[in-house]
Image (cartoon, rainbow, N blue to C red; front, side, top):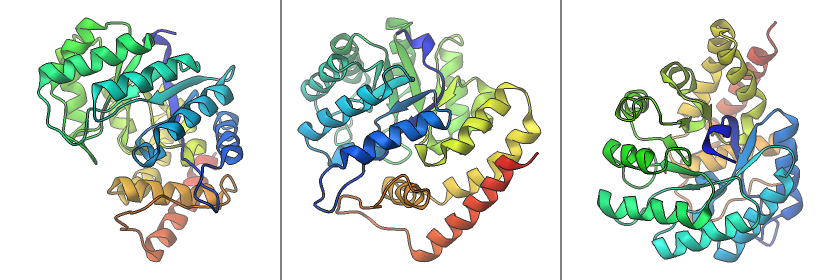
Length: 302
């Protein structure tokens, strides 16, 4: 698969845990199947999959499960970012070995490496995986922002093997700067849960990589945008944007997304791995539930 084949709605999965705190593999596979049944073009392991709280063995297990469940149904993307190039290369090789169509990497979160070192880091990941690499700037909630110059250099070096998931604020202007710096060649997947999808689409995004809890709304939104039906797109985007705006940290994204997967019968438990920063209370969950009902009505509106 080349980078040009990755597009549309690629949903980031959640990691379900059982009563002992171990990965619930049966629920994980069921989640992947549910995402494809609801029209997802692909699935991905990402930051909200709690990769930073998983052991190396568990990351391997998730990658194997994801690629197996996605085989024949859509694109599979595995997060391989790490705090060292050595570890990232190891994750990238494993992802490729179990059949990942692409890998995705954030830069190290604990160091502020310069552009030269980060260029070598991402290039080493691409060389190890030998599949397209999605460069994720997750600085909206963790780590430091990637410079436009670095991303443009990666585009020039890996023209058909690199995509970008920019989540540095301001999202829209940064996306346009990246496209301008690459002569419109950069292939950009919108992040941030679909909150900026309409604006990002208008600016040139070729897809979105949100969490999968609202796949049944994001797929119709994406299709409406591609059909030029902006009335329907804005109708769906209203409550969706309001909902995502309440999620202001990585921990709140995970908590709310798991809450919604439980509400929809996909997960039996909303358990997360701690310690967590909190930030979500019962009133927020109640507001999320009200917004989900509004979103359902918007999607079903004829």
